[in-house]
Image (cartoon, rainbow, N blue to C red; front, side, top):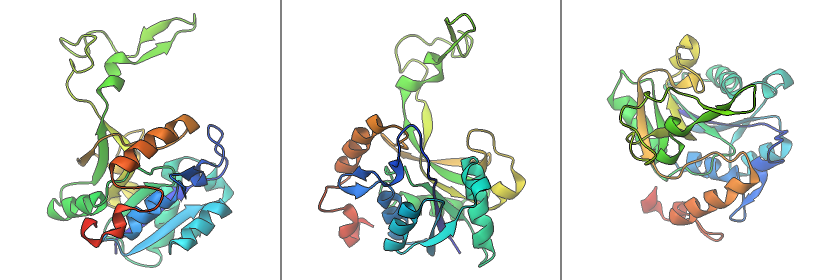
Length: 246
């Protein structure tokens, strides 16, 4: 069995009600639901949530709902994914699991199945993860505030040899964009991944796209809408309307 598990918790502070706020006229969480439903290789879709609006939207798209208890809903994403997987595993044997976020709309059609095929073809892989290239957000440019309210680099100046103010000087920097994770269950059992995504393990195949993001603030919604339009989504249609695009 290959389930898709979408998590979406209530109570966002940075962007209240973000998981069902309208993006191109649809609730934000409709996009991962559509992506999971239109995968040719997933067997079932689950939504783990403590939000009744998210649960209702999930039911509308044919998902099975896993209620999140308060102690899980108030924790981190790893705990919510692990709880959902434990519930699903009571019902069937899980070959691998597709992990999605309610606030992650930028899922290129077909990319979930690419990840599943990668894991089937390469047994040594722990996961396959969507990534986007953001050289302008390189660790080279990262700073933090000191106790004196001054800026200091997060990394030593020689961390990237030969790097300069040119955003491309350190080479391409690929960020997991929280659009989709295809993961083997042992990643949750063994817990050998590293923060901030401990569920992806160590042998990770990149699923490349551009401009991917999860929406945490209202100002990010226009970027997601730009991405969606560039990938064939409008207020009236989606690329899933064409069977050849699946």
